[in-house]
Image (tube, rainbow, N blue to C red; front, side):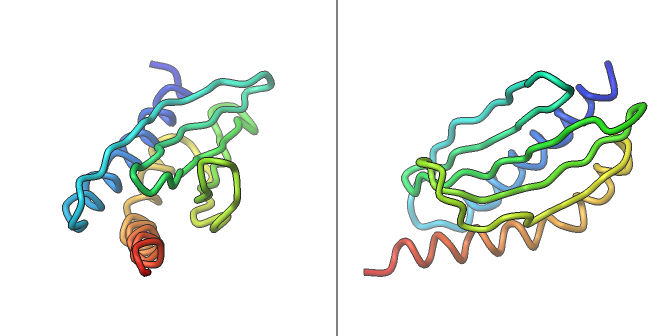
Length: 122
């Protein structure tokens, strides 16, 4: 597997884990749509859209050197409104990115759940 595919798999697994934890903590059933896109110039995007809230967590990344990537995580609405930018910003090779994300999971989950609470208020 290439370094880029390892990074994509790591980022998708992170989003899957955050979605799973958020689903356990909500009083309603959450659904999701997820995937990734490759763009020209070594850029890529990994996303999960969570329903019924229609909130997206989007990792955008690019390769900046031989197997070294810069990755940022934003939270937005399905129509593109940025709710929180640069929630996570990491750089390095796939193993380094994976290690850094472990320490960010609770932060991302807390921000997502807080947003869900705000959206559920009358």
